[in-house]
Length: 110
Image (tube, rainbow, N blue to C red; front, side, top):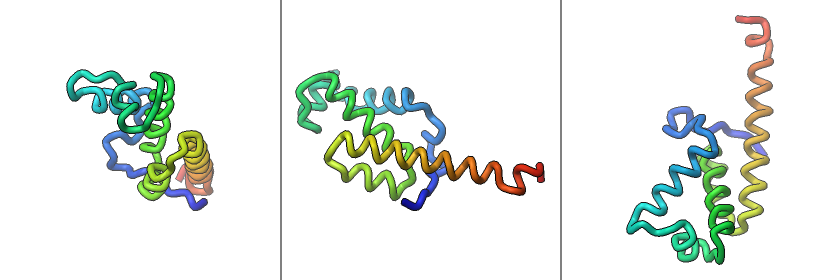
């Protein structure tokens, strides 16, 4: 997997997963005061509030990825696969950033 970083001008860049979850929950439940389970039942075919929360978390995690990886994640129908993909992509981003920060220019203070 070739790592691409998320968009720097993205309004949510650097937001915590909790903030992303809350923003998405607010949007999904804003129309008519529906509970997450009601929305999740229609959109994702979930049967419980916990399943709806897991689905929401997997989509929120995907929002932190690069545009190409985000598109790949959003096409995944399996929630566990989407979560694993997001974790792997984010770990690769961390490794890439760590490498950039420890490169010769950064390490020497230039």
